[in-house]
Amino acid sequence: MTDWAKPSSDASEFPDEPFPCPHCGQMLAPSVRVCVACKQPIEAHQIARPAPAAPVSVLPPEAAQVLAPPVPLAPARFSWPIFFRVLVIWFAVTILSVQFLKYAIAQMVLEGLILLSSIWVFYDAQKRALPKPFRWAIGSLLLWIVVFPWYLSRRRTPLAPCPFIEAEASRAARAFLFLLAAVFLIAALVALLKGHRVL
Ligand SMILES: [Zn+2]
Image 1 (cartoon, rainbow, N blue to C red):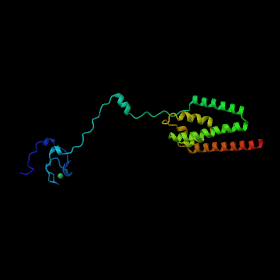
Image 2: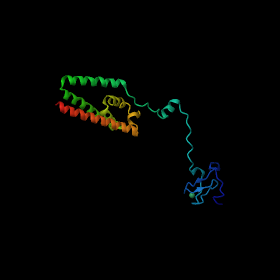
Image 3: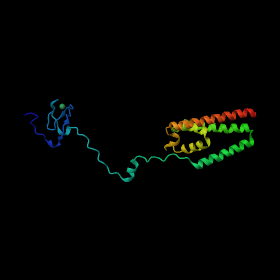
Image 4: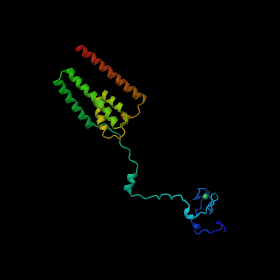
């Protein structure tokens, strides 16, 4: 009597589909009870079966909400309250420095304030991994009274998108920024030359 003839004790447990031999891995037909490759008898309980598909669990609504992808955040917006606070501080600093300092020194203080705060914007945006830190800094340098308060608002929601400043610039936007930078430099140069004539 061979193994072939031995009645399987629990044939019902043998799979209906081809299965790998538990001893050598050879794929075997469902009817095979002794491996054609390694000649080992195969017991039904030895056969590795594919794990049953994970049951689709019915989650309570709260859990489903937790697992749901996060709702995209609203874009970081320009904040008028922050703008007005910055504006008030700026006016106060301007009035005080013009009042108590020589005009040239007051101008240096104000320009230094813009320069330092724009440099801070650059490092702060980098530290917070915000997109386009250089563009924020240049924007602050060129258009401080608008971009600096905007940055103060933007840095509070680092995950929100801010497409107006941080989007990939189109050619037109690049040209506009270049023009703005050129105008700024020319204005600075004119101011410098005037200052020399006055002094
Ligand atoms: Zn085998």
